[in-house]
Amino acid sequence: MTVEIGSVVPDFSAPSTAGEFRLSDARGAELLIYFYPKDNTSGCTTESQDFAQAYRQFARHRTQIVGVSRDSIKSHVGFKEKLGLPFELLSDPDEHLCNLFGVIKNKTMYGRAVRGIERSTFLLDGQAVLRQQWRGVKVPGHVEQTLAAVRVLG
Image 1 (cartoon, rainbow, N blue to C red):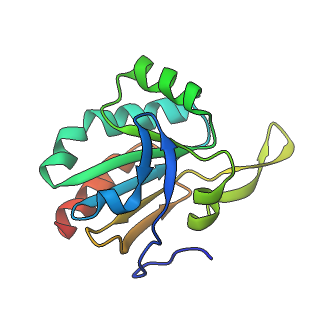
Image 2: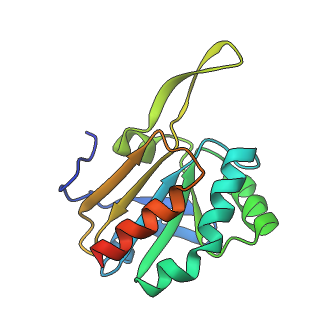
């Protein structure tokens, strides 16, 4: 089952850089979940830094941010510390969240077919209803798009 706009995202938990993250603990405020392919790669670093720079603006609109990839918690902790990220990163090695949000795709990398995360972002309201999604995200200008959607939702 993949979540759709207007549907309630089922409760889930995942290991995070702060312990265990539970969707139910985030209720009452908006939640922005961004899926990215891999820690310490150029596009993922830029995207994470962009969200970090806008963190206070999201917080003013009562919006929590979490990043998700298939990387290990150890990798996430190093990535978070290196970039000074003010939000948590979730580890999804078994692809439970990736499948729930339908972000695993077949892609071509350096001429070979690979299975990986399609850069995607999801905005949930305070009741965990999926309100907006961005798939196949291009990093430049993306944070501004999501912030505009948060302002409208709030």
